[in-house]
Image: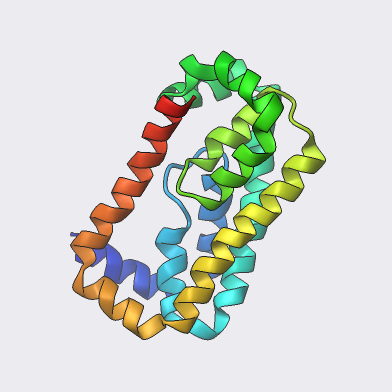
Length: 193
């Protein structure tokens, strides 16, 4: 099944609809969707290495736009939508402690969440709920998300075939590694905050 999903994503990556799908996933991931856009970004860059910077730009722009939705959820709909989302990710009970920390270190938290596998949507919702400065939020999101997407895309562009061969030969291991990083981000939320 994993091989079929990978092959389907690789096939989708070569279609004319791939950039729209990439932008949609990237937008949704910044506010509520659990899977990162890398699941489509990686096969897209592997399929068309010369367009790596276009794909990274799409991810960056749509991710920052999606971050505004997360911010709005936190600012306007925290009790109705934001709190249930945080409860889903196991972060609701730490809200007060996190708010105190966020007032002092929020910018660094946003940057860390934007670059790492840490669930970025949690930080966008928190930012809105505590009224984090929107201009600072925007600038940090652009830098952090851009850094992450351009780094992944650039490396895939430079080392495309060896990386593609590595992924295809070790697809099960790569899936386990990806899931470990994703789950690690959720665990970090629970224990760090």
